[in-house]
Image (cartoon, rainbow, N blue to C red):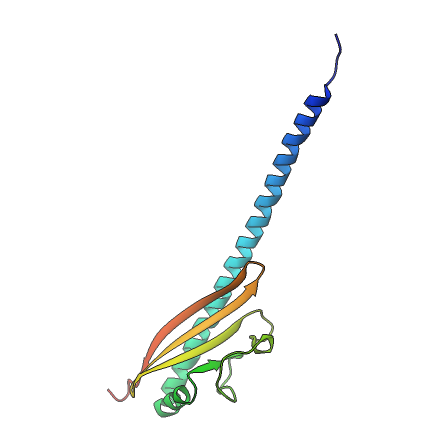
Length: 147
């Protein structure tokens, strides 16, 4: 009678260990990817809400100026939170239009409903290894002082 392991038993044990290690690595990779996606979604939602709040302040500062900007260009690329509008309207054109120091790009699209009502859709998007992602926030602005 021989003692020890046969080659088949060693290979079977090695296969089981390999499957377990591959499963743990795949689980870790998926977990990291999901955490990164959740973080980016949270950040993009925050950037979208910041733009809505800034637009609300612009509306409150003066409806005529606000509606004039919305009429001048239906799409604005908002790269920074500042006290003034970008130099000109238009969609974001590339990496240079990202929010400073981030992977996010933010656009505001206006739809004029009537002279006293404007819808604004803020879209924040980014690209990662999984493709293009976006978060959109829509709000209605009105000339509430005139009512």
